[in-house]
Length: 115
Length: 110
Image 1 (spheres, rainbow over the protein chains, first blue to last red):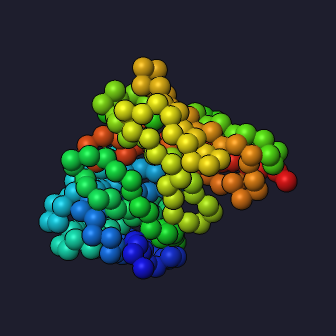
Image 2: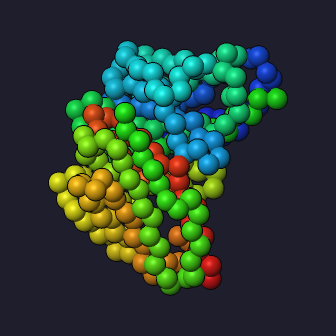
Image 3: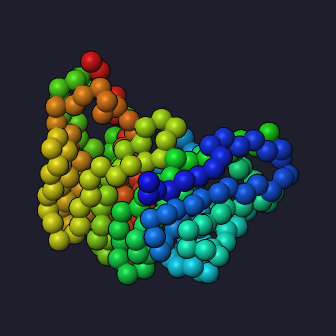
């Protein structure tokens, strides 16, 4: 099956700890995205990558970091500098990132709770 | 940058009635407008999209209209069913990125 996967579905961490969220896709998509979703806030872009070994900050990048060493993988690290990390995190991918805007396929999400 | 406004934030209809959700955008360069449906605890799924060279698109009970001059687009769901209950997001974008509206929670009462 082709698709985009995120793991784990639920994640609990103590305040002050860094945590990495996994995102993998086997759709051969060039572009990948990380969004944060809070109640009543819609989806806000954290980071995006239009090609391997390159990524750009989104609207709310502070306290987060990413890497894009492989086309299939785009992990997100929530650092201790993120002041309010408890949220639902969504990863997405699309065929082309810069040339045109296309459908983004979303993963099932990871709910992070910082205690 | 782009800003997408979505209304209403909540919508309740009787089964069989129609539902309409409206969005406005600010960036005239935006050329792609998808609509996503999100069920509780899941990722959003595309239900229909439209590009700026088209004014209307229909897929069974779902239709989207786009008015480029007024910079607004709407989602129309006819003959609503209880399984249509979910949160719906509009988005607008160009050059790869999408800006999402804040969502509409649709409840269809049997």
